[in-house]
Length: 112
Length: 113
Image: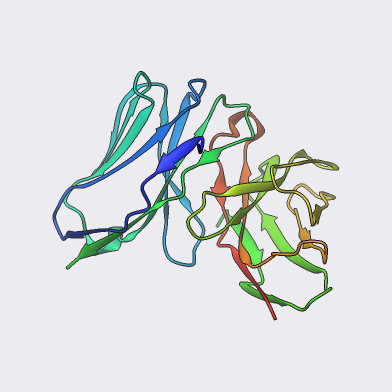
């Protein structure tokens, strides 16, 4: 079993829809949770960063962490064609921990 | 502009050849990392360095080597011992006290001829 599981999709939605992405994990020591966006043939860019449980909102993006269920989510409201990308979740145990555990990524296409 | 640069964008390797991928950052970050990305898999850590002249193996270091002679630079050599080198290679960096927040370069795609 992988330490971080992420549905690879692909996920196709019409413009303006809400995109819902999630990851599950098995390591209860994870405390830092990140979402990266990766456009085709580019490097990942940090999108959202959350510490411990709870919600964090940044514009059209909302990240949720449920540590009791070992489940994290990313929601994209009012999705745009420019949101078409692969979204990677990543997690670590501490801020001094070099090791990030990544999900395999979910590929999202927003249709105009 | 601050950021991470990787070169070349594409690299072709012949059988038995060693090739070196360049990574440079001007973010003044102490820590640097090399990851390998394969389709359908999460990023896997090859090597990391938290300080100049020091580096550690990651999960898949076999067939790779690195050096860290300057804070700004962390080149990766893919040796002939790496039998399946075709992948997308990503370099990243972070502040040493916030290693969970890593910033990535644009990547190098390595293909075998």
